Image (cartoon, rainbow, N blue to C red; front, side, top):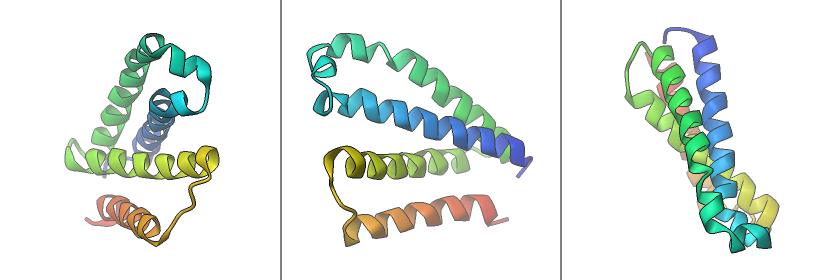
Length: 116
């Protein structure tokens, strides 16, 4: 791994992008305005894409331009954000199956970050 700063920036951008994506896709179940304006909400795709472009850039730099680690980190960050959002907004508890999936996502990140 090249440097910790790039990794932390990449993870930060992935988490931010996943939060915005959660609201873009699931906001229709939270707020009536989002449900009634899907075309306007879809325009958020442009800045969200830019966030993911930077997330990818920084994590690829952090791993000496190896591509796979950033993919797994992006995937796992989405799992964590989705679990938080469904719990917070929809009162959907973390059951055993989801907890195991979250654990596996954590293992994915750990393998990519710590396996040399």
